[in-house]
Length: 70
Image (cartoon, rainbow, N blue to C red; front, side, top):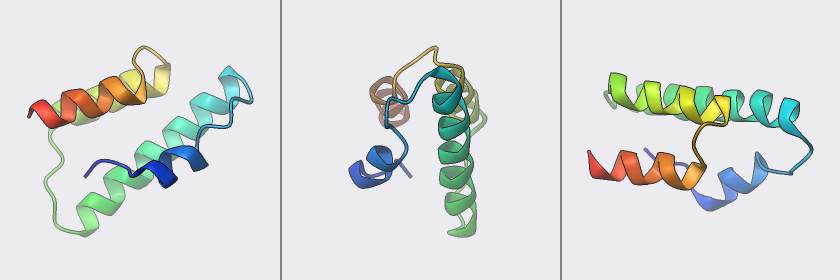
């Protein structure tokens, strides 16, 4: 369910906060949609954590750490 390293690199070019919010939102939308297409249940907690990541409150590493703990 976690994005692989090439997926993360595609969405992190350091072009600024606005791009990052748009890029992070797009990345999380794709990750969640892909998981749902595969029949994976996406917990509410992950969606909340993904929103924190999109806002820039947590890093991708923290998002992955939290997902692995569940």
